[in-house]
Length: 335
Image 1 (spheres, helix red, strand yellow):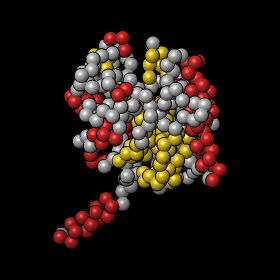
Image 2 (image 1 turned 90 degrees about the vertical axis):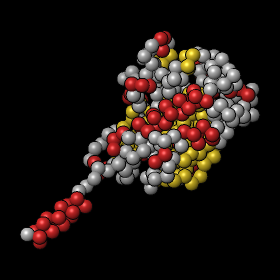
Image 3 (image 1 turned 30 degrees about the horizontal axis):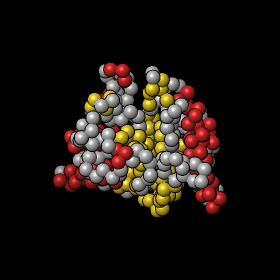
């Protein structure tokens, strides 16, 4: 009898070892955090609206709530489709490295050991782009900022840099560009040339890399302040997984009861020719009920931190977006 139970135990142990566990998805995201300032390391005078002494009364408590909420979003995105934390996420409207340090140190995110890449830009509002990454999925190799300022552009005021990062994502070399293009302030038509120039700079970066490596894989993400059908986005000549969502009426930001999909993640046109786990993907606009405004003139919009100078305790005026890469072993084609 003892030998019988020993045999059954060994058989069950063998079976458990050989059960195919669900392969994990790779999550690539982007999130405009909307005015993610700190209250203690104010290094730019332009952010004076976000101080404890301002009309907004942006205290350490408000800052803590903001950081916790952003962490909650990143955590939730990292739990989608059997994923184990988000692999990489580009972020916009972050003031400095201190807010990034606080964000990745939030208790809900600590187990992922996130790291970040960030450079201070000369943006007038004092906000930058950055890349947060999970070392278990992404290993950076080379990174630098690219300014939009030259002899003929942005001489009167500075705007956000483009962050370029080369690294290995799930074992494959990729080139990532994180963007936050000039806003539509002053009118879409008047400001259009600024975004066309941002697209031109972004395309020049990619073209310089493609000369050396024609099969280079690009992930171009950001708040482009333009929709997938606008000329600036088309100038990049990339695959846009979010085009169909936009045509079906989905958006990541609302203004005057009209939705726009300014937040997008684009890919190289030959991306699908690969045979690795980064081939099958689907785009999503990530939301949870707590991120949606339930009252006032912004009801149904992304729930922002402030309604004017009134603290609403929300998340951001943007919804984040993501591409979910499903392993080939799952047998699913998601494109």
